[in-house]
Image 1 (cartoon, one colour):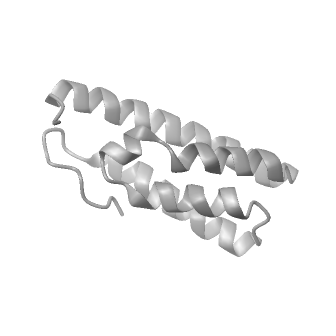
Image 2 (cartoon, rainbow, N blue to C red):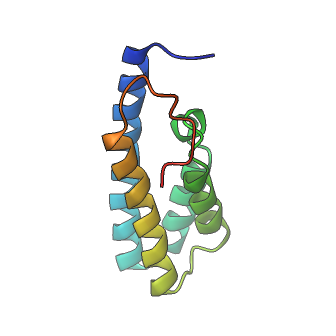
Length: 105
C-alpha cells in the first residue's frame, strides 16, 4: 500500500529523527563500551518499520551486524556509522512523492 505524499513526508521526518537519535545513542554506547546497549540498539534498527517501508536494507544490515556482534573494532564501527549517516542524509534530501523504495546510499 502506498502512502499519501504528506504521510510519506511525516514518515520520512520521523525516520530521520529516529535514526539520528539511534546514531547518537550508538556513538555514546560505543564510547562507553556498553556492548549490551549496542546490541539492543542494533536489534531495534533491524526491525525499524520506517526503514522497511522505504526499502532501506542497509539499516537492517547494520542492525543485524550490531545485534550479532556488538564488540566491533573501531574501524568497522566507523564504517557502519558512515553508512548510517549516508542513509540519514539521503532521507533528508529525498524529494517527496518519488518512489523512494530503492537503496538510499
